[in-house]
Image (tube, rainbow, N blue to C red):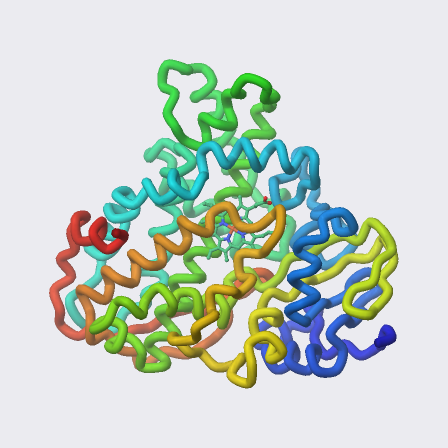
Length: 409
Ligand code: HEM
């Protein structure tokens, strides 16, 4: 294949970003590696995206999430923008407090957070579930995993949400950014000044070096925590919102409420069908060939996770259909692959399972609300509906933390 001028899908087109699937299908069919600007190539085929996730020698994570030449203007890069060996060191350090077993041990806390969110729902009537139920769950879970003192949770949530809503404005120019940095700086200094209050959490792990590890500056710890907020919160909200939306849209809610053995795979199919993180970008550091297309160093590649997860060559002729019984759904690339693959995947899966399972216990006959419509949230990176309207039909919303804990087992 030779390099073509055609740009069936480009992240520079707001229409494509809002509703990407037809354009991505055209890209896979006509031009799976297409140059869409002087710097950017869009990569649409599943096999190419998977191969690129694994090729960290030729592809750098610098400038990840941006689609122009710019890198992020930060004093310290977060983990998803780092390359080995600095990345390797940070990842294994984070793994001490984010190993799958550790993350799954947060189940009782997740259960309490869900029970509290459920308390706010009425017994019946139309509700917008993203605002009234979903949004608080991943933020409270993330803050607890990190070790952020609870007195800061509500302010930090408001600040972090304001930064996300402003995308693609540069967050560093916003007053919310300054305030968030100030709070996080105080939290880091507070923990370091009081080693007697040490706890087994991410904050501790980053504030205090283990033997052989490097001490980090306060600002560096703050930047890593900041990236964890972003990585863990909105993506998981999107997963829960997407999954509930599609189950209601396809009439699968009552079926799964009656047979919970279907729920785990339904979550994987949701991750495949509506990939919460739509793409990652990589900087090409050596001349290479992507697919059959030569790409020279200095360019960037937009790895379309959404397209890979809808590729007919891998998923067959039903690739663009939502099917909760799809056998191989779990093979999606929604959590990436290779050395940067998602560290929080076990936690995201557990939160989604518990949040939906408990909602089904209490509202087994929940249906799509009259105002339900798919309109993608703003921003390039995330895919979720702006709103998830549902109709609750009379069951009692009296969840207890014990119900929720049992759901995770
Ligand atoms: C449905 C929810 C989530 C999705 C779809 C998601 C997606 C991803 C993807 C695609 C990557 C790969 C980045 C790359 O290749 O450049 C990634 C990395 C990462 N994710 Fe997640 N994520 C989710 C939830 C979480 C949660 C809950 C946490 C934290 C508890 C988390 C922490 C991370 C971290 C630390 C990395 C960086 C790993 C590295 O660079 O080595 N994520 N995530």
